[in-house]
Length: 275
Image (cartoon, rainbow, N blue to C red):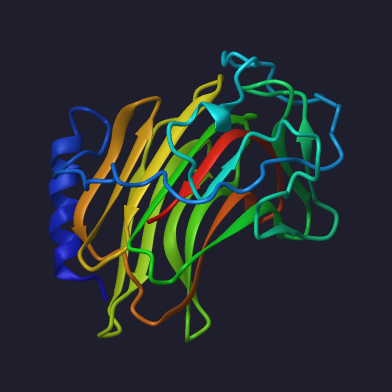
């Protein structure tokens, strides 16, 4: 059952977006209080020195000043993958299915390394991502990263704020690559059992490093704001972002697919923050 509030907001966004080919309506939530807490140690595992099939963009950040050190306030998690340790250092865990890999790569926005996520499967489901736990009581979550995608067809999750429910279904905010286009998808379940689905299909990613910022107010009503290279591409307010019976909440960064396919993505200068 699609909730009435979601329908009205989605319709308003659709009408206003026709001319601009982006979705942006309402007012953004205030996330200026984020980026505070104890920083986790960034790092990486055995480096993947191969750049075969990878994009060649090397980024522009001055390597003399580390990304995490350059932040005015330390967030809960900052990872620039430049310290030479395991790629999952500072993260809650690495979610890697059999035959897939997460590794360091010399293709980086801020040298010397980035996080390489790569999947290649003929069986369907495959995961190659890093996971960071978030308290289920967190009302605001900020996710930020640089991303470089190799061209690929198929359906791949890139970054997700997951909300696991008592019924065993995973809900949340999904930032995806579907048939060569970026898709932002919201799926939640309210206290009355009603399911909310909202989908924004954006354009194709750039061939160079993209700066992605995702701000989520986890409430009912809540909000989702997404920026690409500083420009707002999704601005949903007064939408039900919270799944009432969630038992777990966490951020996944990296590739996941439930269909056969092959893809690779590099991520660098990652921030996950919440109050």
